[in-house]
Length: 156
Image (cartoon, rainbow, N blue to C red; front, side):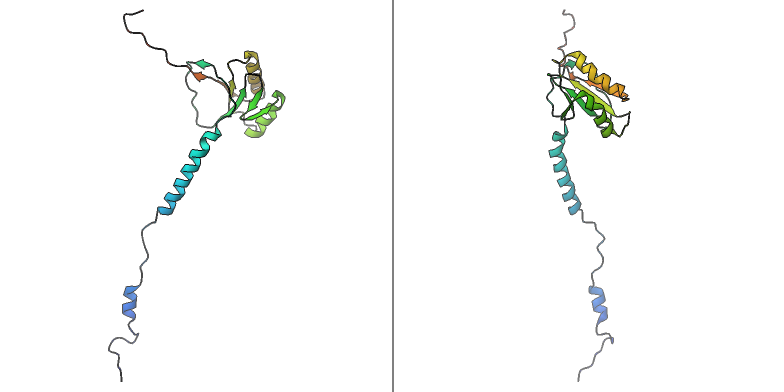
């Protein structure tokens, strides 16, 4: 006949000590994986978000316009065609499209890009239409000129 010398629970003390305790460490591996995937996605898509209309911008020594938000770009190519971002449209359809995109917000920055070979009057016509629609922050975009070589002191 067998008898038990321990407690009557059949060794429940031992099983209590062997139980797993909750882990207090945070596993960051899934978060790092997600962040790396997002980084790759943004690295691939960021170059695609630039305006795709080919415009040969005039060169100037003007300073860079400060700003944090992403501006809308209205482009006028060498043939005088008007583009909003990548979409070609008539000048008469520009203002309704701008108002729809901006939610009729007059403080949205709008950049007008004009090809250096296009008639200056055409660029000013586009800029005037945008300004007359109530948009207050309209700017011309140029390409930064190459720095001129500095002369040494004492030479002319």
